[in-house]
Length: 205
Image (cartoon, rainbow, N blue to C red; front, side, top):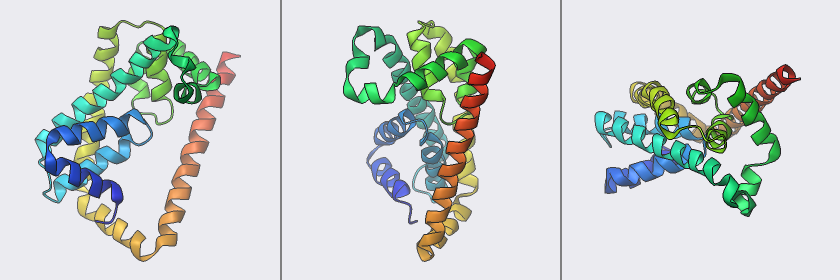
C-alpha cells in the first residue's frame, strides 16, 4: 500500500476512531479531497486495518462536522471573519458569487446537490450560512445527502480495495504513469468545474 494518504489514515486510526474522525473531517473540509479520503478509508477496511460499520459511522459524523464548519464560516462572514487572510483567499468574490447563484437557483436543495459535485460544495455551504439558512434545514439536507454519499464511497473503497492497491503499486513501478493520471484528473476536474461555472453564470445573464 504505497499511497501516503492510506498510511496516514492507518496510523491515525490505529490510535483511535477519534483520530480517524479528526482526519476525515479535516480532508472533508477541503471539499475536493473528501472523495479520496473516504475511498481510502474503505480500502483500509478491506485490508483489515479498521472495521466497516464503525468506520462508516465515524466518516459520516466527520463529514457532517466539516460541513458545519463551512456553514459556520458563512455565519461569521458578517462579523469580520472575511478579513482574516486565509479566509480572504478562500472566500474570494468569484467563488462567493458562484455560490450565491447556485444557492439561489436550487434553494435548500442546493445543499443536497452540492454534496455530489466537487468544486462547489464548500462555496454552497458557506453561502447557506451567509444567507442565514436555518441550521435545522441545513442539517436535514446535508445529513440526507451524506446518507448516500459517505457510505457509498467507503463501501466502494472496501469492495475495490485490492484493485486500488494493485493500481497504486503500478504507479510506484511506473511513476510517470501516476503523474499522468494525476494531471489528467486535475485537468478534467478543473475543466468540469469551469464549464459548470460558465453554464451557471450564462443562465444568470
